[in-house]
Image (tube, rainbow, N blue to C red):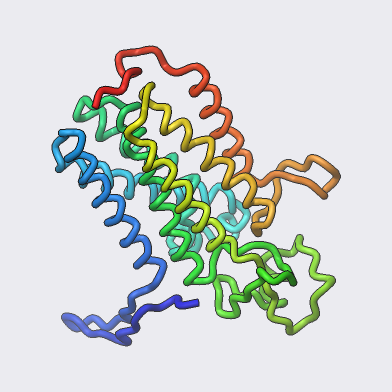
Length: 288
């Protein structure tokens, strides 16, 4: 874990004193932002579009993504919002990717409509960037000790004693009371699946696949629809070892689906349907 990259301590500017530090999660978000920008800038050049569009698209995606992810987080944790609305709304937590995907999509759509650009074609362009941004963001989650998986005593297990929240017996019991910790004792530092790194590795693989196929598109939108399928599959299966509550129980509190899995099923279903039934309009054929 490396939650703080550099701590400047107390800083005074214009008579105002505050604590200044570079946090690893925020740094990874910046790295993700500029990585996506650099790749999109080069794609705009390759496809003979105005390269200034890169900054407009990435900025709108970032703003929409942050707003959307926060809204999703608040809805998913409505009980905690009711108990502490101010703390939940204005906390630094809550950058949930699936909510960010929806919010970012709205933000990008606004830019594309404003500039009268083909939505499906740009969805294909952006699809690999969504995956690389997600993967880099997961590195930030790992460094801060957030979004880890279920307790495990396997060789994959890692502890986040200073995580958010810490993987101590007391912290896990308080924050995730539905978990069975009968194999652990009070005072233990619990090891969990490092799902952040697992997702990063898988995400980079998906990015490489999408990036390699970006110039081989027959029907516009097909690469984005493929992204919906593979990204949905990745999140659906990783949720089985992540610490997210289940909302839809299939087998008597033994097998259940989380909210993220429900959205992943919707993503996969939309992607499969549209790959089999590509939209028939003026955007359908790729022209590069």
